[in-house]
Amino acid sequence: IVALISLSFGGAVGLMFLMLGCALPQYNRYWPLFVLFFYILSPIPYCIARRLVDDTDATSNACKELAIFLTTGIVVSAFGLPIVFARAQLIYWGACALVLTGNTVIFATILGFFLVFGSNDDFSWQQW
Image (cartoon, rainbow, N blue to C red; front, side, top):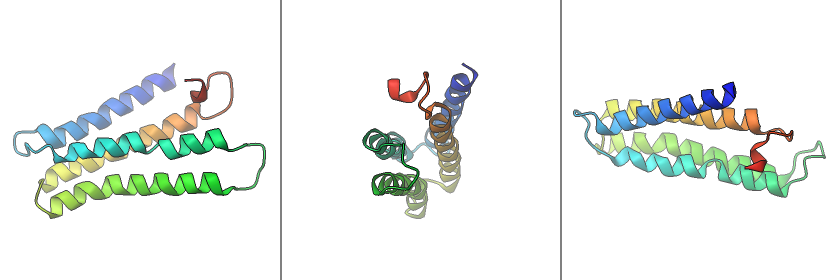
């Protein structure tokens, strides 16, 4: 229960930073909300790979490695998009900093979710 509440709090704080980067009166531009697509897409490759891969072997396999590579590309893109927006002067640098802070918190929360609920015990994320 404590882990679930902590992860919920982390997600709320991360989304608060993202919304502050969009909605504060001095910024007032909503381009950074495109980062939400990366939040949704980031766990998908790894979830698919976990369903397809048998975890009994200790060796690395190509499916799981490809999933980690795709997830890494999505996460890097989520950090790069606000910087590109700021360089193109679509958003201000202060908004970019808030969005990057929100990205850090959200992706740490997603990683924490997989670390807490990723084991194959009775209370697993695979049951959801």
